Amino acid sequence: MIIVTGATGKLGRRTVEHLLERVPTDRVGVSVRDPRKAQDLAERGVRVRQGSFDDPASLVHAFEGAEQLLLVSLDRTGEECVTGHRAAIDAAVKAGVGRILYTSQMGAAQDSRFQACRDHAQTEDLLRATGLPWTALRNGFYAASALQLLESARHTGDIALPADGPVSWTGHDDLAEAAAAILTDEGRFEGPTPPLTGPAALDFDAVAEIAAQATGRPFTRTVVPGEAFRKQALAHGAPAPIADLMLSIFAAARNGEFTAVDPTLAELIGREPATFRTLLEHTWAE
Image (cartoon, rainbow, N blue to C red; front, side, top):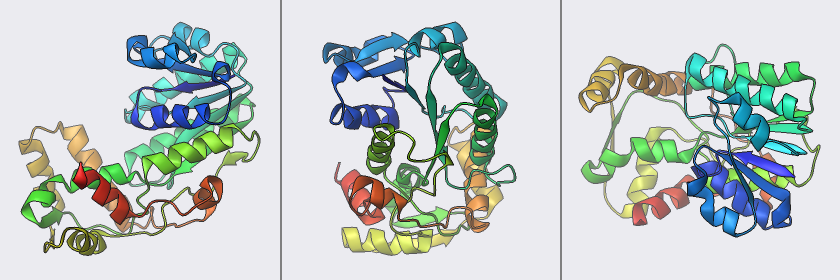
């Protein structure tokens, strides 16, 4: 039995679909906050149980019988994030889970400039302390984040963002397929994986060129001072912690934390991962 948390989210749902292509349906289970959102999975024979990171007892029940658990990282930051992950890891130990796989991130480190990477590093320490077999999927930085940052530029033609550095932007679909490949070939990685990245590390100057090539329209790259960017984010309704979190992505990129490009993802999925241009064209076509 393989249990996936966050199975109604962007990465978890895709991973479940890839698992169902590889193993019998009765070997797949999901732990979700709202089982109604996974009703279609239940109808296909997937075991659906309610599990909330804020209710450890529900997680123990949701994880029951799992040989492997894919713990999809929470969309939270700081202590709130690590506390939720701790609850899930403790529940996995109580439920007798055989192996935990965790969706970490390239650049996970205690001294990262990016809060999420510090949270991932703390979670990896919690996994290490369990004594259980575990794997941290060091996922490349999600290309969806870059595309979100480009949303206004898509209309204005001006990529007005803080100074950055090269980032290995990586697609959710490729990472989900890699997770499924690892889950169905147990023990392939012990501890952190190599960085699971797209085929190139790009800064936003390079992204501007790609956007121009993809659309046939000119794109400019304007460097916005950090404090001005923060004020803009606040003016658009972002809470201060989110504005600071966004700003820290650029600080970490300038620090070279997301520059690694590694062949492991391609080896896992049996092809070159999607390029940023492909992901941009697909998203903007929608």
